Length: 91
Image 1 (cartoon, one colour):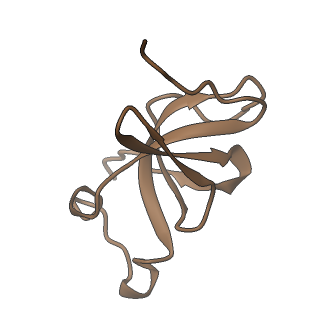
Image 2 (spheres, one colour; image 1 turned 120 degrees about the vertical axis):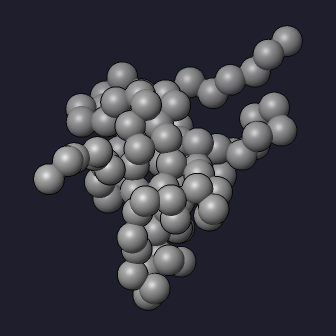
């Protein structure tokens, strides 16, 4: 039987990107490399207001809890722990 986590309330399930993928096209100051992480939102709880499935988000390295589902690592965090969403803009 396949298992999956359904976030409750204002929780968000994020698939964290590996360090190699994080450095592609996004410039982070050296001092912040260990202070933030990037990930793709996989599921959102019913009380989430601003976060959408598929968004690329930035969150603190100590935010949320790591959960292993089917041999894959995810991070479950509160919507308020998301620092921001990365948008693709052509300025």
